Amino acid sequence: MKTITLPNILGIVIELGEEDIDLPGTYDGGTIKSDMAIPITDMMTEDEREDAEHFNGRINILEQIILNCAISGVDVTSNAFVEAIESTFELVNGELSLKRQRRLLLSLS
Image (spheres, one colour):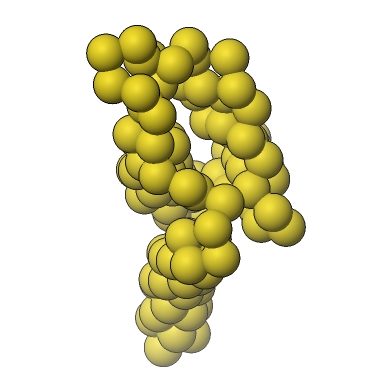
């Protein structure tokens, strides 16, 4: 087992399984946890819940990409990889913000 904590970003922690003896440098599965998803609460409106579920679906895909890279032996702690993850998260988060802004503008008209 190997634990990887990505430096300074979004609470990403990866737990890798045993090293694959047939493919050195790769691992037999793993799990990932992060602080990127939006918690779904009963206090949310239907639109907010829908936005959060859509956002969280994209975050799940991003987490799976990160995990699969780590399992495959990619150095997910490298500066270039971390910057790519941060940029991708900002892009996904920005799309959510734009959707909320559009909804607000429509409600005001």
